Image 1 (tube, rainbow over the protein chains, first blue to last red):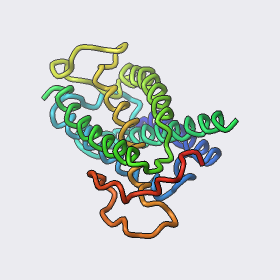
Image 2: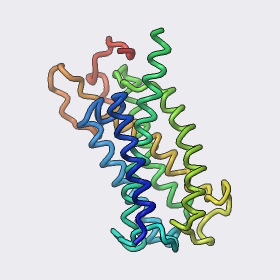
Image 3: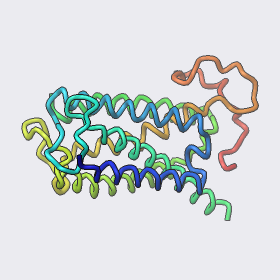
Length: 107
Length: 133
């Protein structure tokens, strides 16, 4: 079982949590809202993936870097963490950019 | 169905949610989100997608049916993949804005839920509050 990709995703996600907590960007700004946004986002992108897979547009590559655990045909468990990272990164960036702009505006 | 045809469907949903958020802001609702911050995030997420999508395809995490993609690439990443990044940067802050439309500490009343915002926005938020907290 290849754990490399999953491990990389978990490390990156941990980084997102550290930044979120340090600068109050997303969950540390409004936990309830953040939870809803993250869950809706991940479910939306998973639906997108499933349509892509069932339409035969894309599929799992041949690699040793993944665990091989699937949550759906051709949909590796790693994808859930990838989509979570995409959503968390996006909202951290929006939050961080907002804080920087705010700081500049009030200086 | 091609990759672009599928993306069109999902991007239409994203656009719809984005329009609701913009409409809410237009009513004077305090969004708490600066539009410029969404632009900055968009630039960074697109650049990161260009880098990491190439890595992910390069090491074989994902593959594509050549008949269903446009054949336009950034490196080895199909151009269509960038729709995910664009969708994330529009959909998620829009949801954040829409979910924040019940102003804390003000009376209830706002009963039509988070998905609304179809025109009846005048009763939504305190128009006197300014965006910079």
